[in-house]
Length: 468
Image: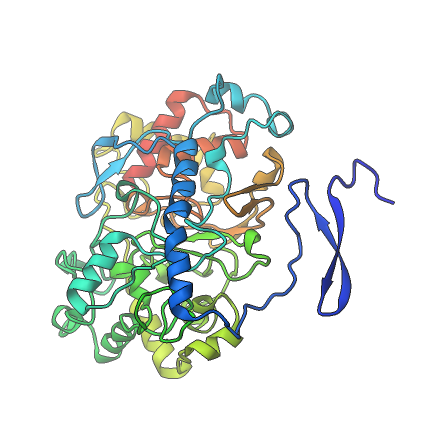
């Protein structure tokens, strides 16, 4: 029935709920369909035993992830000379994705998708990046965020079963500056401080109106979440008040915190999700990397009702889902988010293009490539460098499905076009953070879109992106 060209997997019969079902397994025998979409609710293992068991496995999971990162990337400290984020943190430079032995980027780009796939030459760092512990999943916070919340609020976002994986040098600066569209004259309204419930009123009272101030309070208020809640099904040592929107979107930007998207099942097919910045949401029309939610109000409500609990309303009810009132609470939160501005870019004209008098020759050449040969502007038009649409890169043309540290690398579907304004402030890149630097991003798109850029052209394009 299945010819070799049409089907190369394995058939298996599974017993689920008293019924036989046919599963299709790819060559590495990972099921394409799980036994159930629901998470377990009736837990039988006492919490102390669960905690001790998972804590004992923590070091092993961290070692596996570190080995994967070292295999894929150069994780060294190589900042770009004279280039910093808006608050002064150095920007890491250079291509960090490692090539297969004996290969060069130019030779690889000349092979074409089928040859790269058939010869297994697609760089591992271009494959989907697994969660720090993909089978476990859930929200994981960088150490700087954990330490600051402990200091200010005595609230602990440490997980006893796993830690964040990427080195701090590849993350956005913390705390990040916060800019308001309504008061650009103020510059960084946070004054270099991490905004929390302890200081938000002091910082924003008299600058925003009472409705917006209430929206900010709610964005800073912790609510129960899958891994951080008051039940025995949690991953914090003590019962937790939960997490707040600004625990990931720190200062209205991002701290690089990661999670797993709630849409896909089974677990191995879920995508790692790098926290996107909230800067510039006022010019965006789609929200969520794949969900294409149509307003920031939709996104705000979705996060509380679904994303916090892996899209499972059954466990949400058990752990204490926070139902926001759409007409007031959601509206207030959205109104504050809509005021979060991109960082200043004094080198850009009002149309978003370079001021020639302030740009270097490399930046000017990079701009010409961006709007010309590289065709970046077809998806990222000025002035905000997004088309507010979805695009499917079909990167799976270059590799065969494979399982890495519990994550299935296969077709991912369409993703939203993120704005590139202020992009140097928001590493790592792509929806899952698999690209550590802008040079990695240029190499990825040069290969996947078959652009055939020359080495100097790729350097010039990265220089232009840092100027945005």
